[in-house]
Image (cartoon, rainbow, N blue to C red; front, side, top):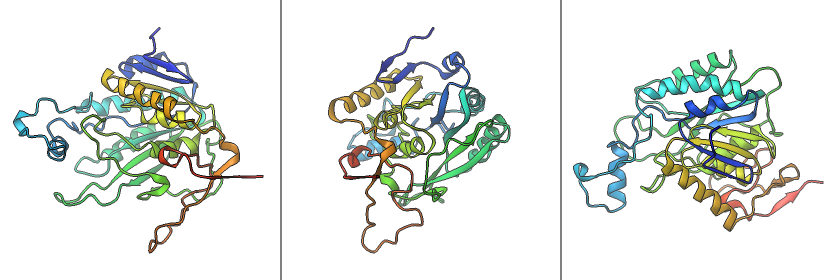
Length: 308
């Protein structure tokens, strides 16, 4: 049996290749699979992101003098093979009605989102549910079409009604800039190069799970999914091949233990709706949607209204 790298308060981390660890998990054991796998783009391996970090962090190295770029493991052509295999495993370990939410790329010369969508639908036996667009906002100047969005592919395991805990009936398939506090991250050199906002992962955790449900992230990175789960009172299992990022994930989880108290009172609380900035029209989907919006990160101390 594989020993956990970390295991506390319902959160478990395994350091290793998910192709070795996932098959050891029993069938129908998770309520949600939520993950951000490598896209196969060789990110931060001497690419533009590497140069940007050097420039904006005031480093003096030239391109040829930078010694460590921080490439992501399995982020070359092999990523497609791994992801296609993973979709089958996701279906196996999910309970009936559970969803797989998989982050995916946003445009570019490789039609990755189309290929992965077809593979996901195939693995879930025509169970592809939707493609969600995360609009990250303006990207500034750049070459040709700028990639200002990413997608999240969602599939549902058949056999039961979809695990869905929204009550507003107004959840759109576009996550707009700043909605629910979701803001793009420009990673620093001490962060995972494709780190996602905690609020983004929390958005899907809240829609598709209840308190004490069990979530799986087999491409954990620096643990953002697990941080969201811990803040929202869920149990979670993460797998990450890099011990460097496993350690960062553990540090982030322990910061929650030290500096904050997770809010687990989801069933009876709705966050007070915020007014949009002056001059900005409120989008169709209100900031509070209708499912329970627990407090995350900087919103943790906001006042709440308890329903009778």
